[in-house]
Image (cartoon, rainbow, N blue to C red):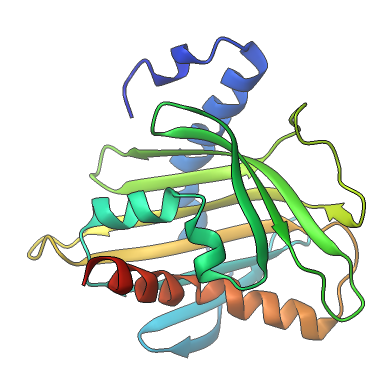
Length: 217
């Protein structure tokens, strides 16, 4: 991310929202390494953890090592079209507007399940490399005038979501990857659906690895 990337956003509200996404990204490493995470599942080298936030929301963390360069992972994970490839419940992932290559406002829509209405989200996302050389993607939900609430869908609220992609010191084509989320789905959800969401979010890294292999191997 260029130092003056935010200056390209002339709308003050949107600029502040993007800057806040960067601030959340600066705190995402502490969030991912905070106390309280409990192991939920493990498969194919990916470990999934869950915990409750202070406000009672369900948080999910997936962690593992991928045999790809950190820049490749970051760019692929940031692309809006990647989400439906990795999550069959995602009906739509589209850019509302973007500012350069590293800041975007996007719309996400997910199918309903088990008599539960579908959810949709409007997020601002940023990507950058931090002072430790880690690639960071950070997102959270914001209102946007071009995407009011949609009939048939409940508007959810991503409190924080993001990626920490750390290059391997000895192998540039290997990276340690962490994916974390704290989401308010706006309404009570059946336990079975919560468990399904936990699993899908946590193992998103594994699905991302599958798609990377299709794309680059």
